[in-house]
Length: 96
Image (cartoon, rainbow, N blue to C red; front, side, top):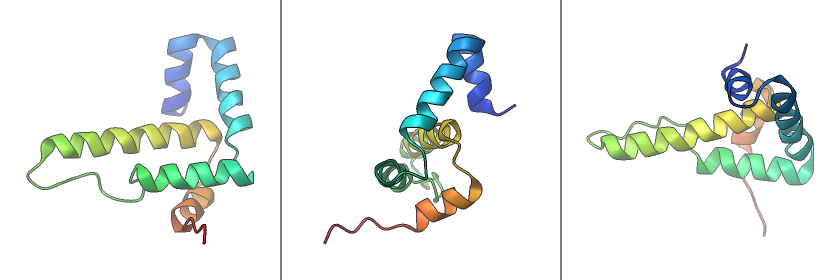
C-alpha cells in the first residue's frame, strides 16, 4: 500500500480516508487544465525534480525535503502517474 494512503487510513479510518483521497483526485486531477497548472507550479516550487540537499546547510536541506515531501504526498493523492510527473516537471508556465 502506498505511504500516503497508509497515512490517511491511520489518521482518519477507512471511510474518511477514501473520501479525502477522492477529494484530492476530484479537485486536482492531472487531466484538468487549472488543476494541472497548480500541480505543475507546486512541482516546481517544491523542487520535486531536484535534489533537496544543500551542501553545508542542513536546515535548508530539511526545509527543501519537507516541501518536496508535501508535493509528493499531494501527487500521490491525486493519482499522478510517472508519465504525468515527468510532464508536470517539463511544463513551463508562460503567461505572456
